[in-house]
Length: 174
Image 1 (tube, one colour):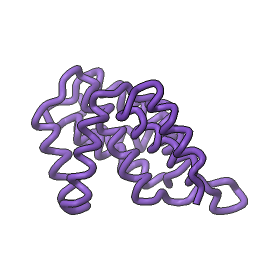
Image 2: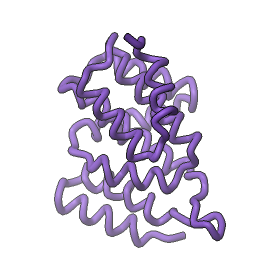
Image 3: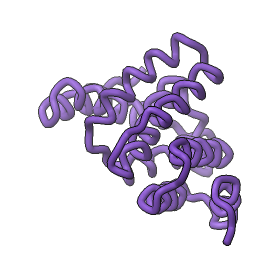
């Protein structure tokens, strides 16, 4: 089990952003440590549960913060999703992480590119779909959120057609 990336990430995070930074650094280090090729083409295997939790909370926090305010409706949407999909224990831990992540500046591009390397295409589509749901939880998707979602889709390497299909589920075409 590799721990080098986790230790370096946690150390750098602690030095630059205190205990919360250490947690984020540990999560980023986890992604680096657990990246392993699945075949000779260089594609990557499905992420572990911890990878999933960290990356999911980072993305959700980024979208929630994008319009300048975190609303209860967004928190309720995330809480409901986590409880229904993963159960109470996971949801409680994830929501604690989310609370800390909402206070941090997140290097979204580098993080999203790592997710692209770690997750299969379908999993990245599911992530983007969830993020659109978070953005719409307050009743509408703000222009800044839409721009961020488009960037995430680009960083994830999703086709324009697939991104548009997800967008159309949340925003009526005019």
